[in-house]
Image 1 (cartoon, rainbow, N blue to C red):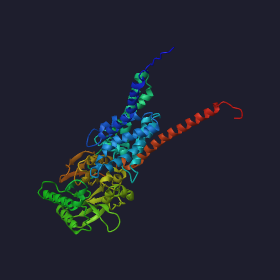
Image 2: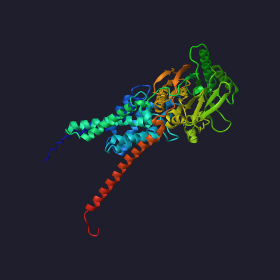
Image 3: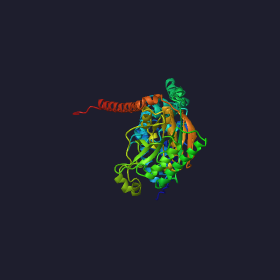
Image 4: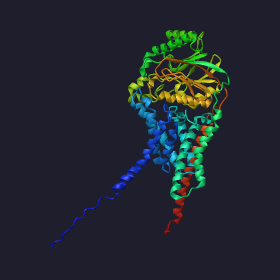
Amino acid sequence: MSATMTTVEPPPPASAPGGGQRLLRGLARPGAALVSGALLYASFPPRTLWWLVLPGFALLAWSLYGRRARAGFGLGYLAGLGFLLPLLFWTGAEVGPGPWLALVAVEALFIGLTGLGIAVVSRLPLWPVWAAAVWILGEAVRARVPFGGFPWGKIAFGQADSVFLPLAALGGTPVLGFAVVLCGFGLYETLRRLLAYRRTGTLPRRAMAAAAATVFVPVAAALAALPLVDDSAEDGTATVAAVQGNVPRAGLEFNAQRRAVLDNHVRRTLQLAADVKAGKVPRPDFVLWPENSSDIDPYRNADAREVIDRAAEAIGVPTSVGAVVTPDTGPLRNTQILWDPEHGPTETYDKRQIQPFGEFLPMRSLVKKISPGYAEMVRRDFGRGTKPGVFDLAGTEVGLATCYEAAFDWAVRDTVTHGAQLISVPSNNATFDRSEMTYQQLAMSRVRAVEHSRTVIVPVTSGVSAIIQPDGTITQQTGMFTPDALVAEVPLRSSLTPATRLGTLPEGVLVAVAVAGLGWVAFRSVRDRRHTAGGFVRNRPHTPGG
């Protein structure tokens, strides 16, 4: 007798829809981290959408809140990529995507570590305060290492149009950045508390009040700091001219046409002298040329010296000339030269914060193996200056922070503490074509104007050159890749803001807060592990001979 066997087909796995949902949930936080970084980028110039930084940090907080350290690092790294990939796109404008991608990959590591720190302190009471301080800790480290640091992308530099800007005068870029980050994290914490109330029907008043305070206190502090923003002429005024000679064409190749660049600045200064003589513009007290306006060393080349002499004599006032000085031995120098119309070159200022992989080549032997062509472009390194640059130009003390130096707090501050009544940021952005770089740098100068309550003049080889008032407003600016000259009467000031007086102290305090928060988490973790281990030993069953 035979038995008949029936085969029953297994039902389709019930977990399939759930698996898809789990996948989507798993991608939600990484996606949010990337979008948060994109919002941070969108808040930066040339856009004036500074307020996007707040939902950007709120979204970052949602992705990091309560995460483990490893997840915090990964999510922070994704946020860093979303932020820095578009922000620093200009770094590959003329050298290709390799250096751009390498720079972003390294700099995003710092934001990854910051994300790790934010994730672990999110378990603490008043976590938005600790987390915002951790962000400033990350910026402080990134501004110093490696190779002298790269502070481009500090959150404060995207706030030149924001309501928070007066805080720059109170505590510099660290306090400004901390307030913005705190407000964004506070928005998330407030929303989280409100959603919890909808679910449970209970609303802890103290916790809710603390969350609301992290939103309102930064805004209130910014409003309270408004009296620190002052553009009155404490020391009278000066009439300044900023010359933009333009370059023959954009890109690295313009260095091969350095004589044409010099001639452009001479020609535009001669035109300015003619306009003054014709009464079209007022006679300036002094003239500011940009960085690299003379890539021919005027100390070694008689022709270069002759044409600069001719321009200075025509305008008849002291002129600050940006030159590349080429000694017989040793490093090159990126120098500002005070050119007197009667006596020629007198004082000099050598750029102190030079750009790695642009003005000097770290790890040259390794770079030669990876990219011989790039190493050949940077054949001779520039050296660092050692003294702050303050020129006496017709009785006005003018502080000098050359191009890249504007991103470094100390490089601008010490010109003011050494007596600068006005700040000049001579720059050369021609290498980066028509990218956002020049607008990002211009925003830095606007923040510096408020931070130190000084007029800031930005003469650039190819644009954008600008006149910035001590309250951060731009009163004149040029177009890009056009010869021009800006002439303006500007206020001179000598009083010091709290930010100038305090120097690195606010940053040091915020770093200490971050370290204390991280230390608290570490202490609690060790204590909990010991208690767990101790409880296991106490409760372990007794065994004979044990």
